[in-house]
Length: 116
Image (cartoon, rainbow, N blue to C red):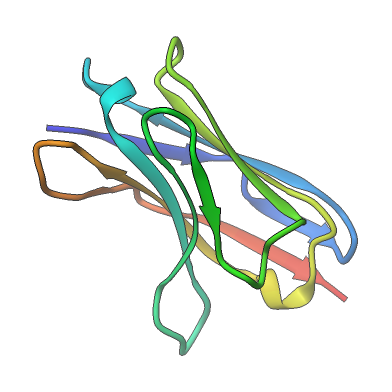
């Protein structure tokens, strides 16, 4: 069982930055791919960024060049650095663990609001 706890969300002006953190329980964190998703009101949840166990990353086109996903295996934590934020980045951001053994685990979400 994996438990995920996100933090770091909040209210920021357009052009600003935030860093989200996701602390994971369990002793196989380093073997799992980790991802950030987001869901805006009235829209489906979408993948924002993903990082595999060796640090290879991939991003949604809408955040490329502005967001950076990273992981610290010693701290069982994955991060999402968000720069040059836009009002359209406003959403609830969810951390997602993808164990190599299968399955998918989700955090409770953290709200990010970008004002214009």
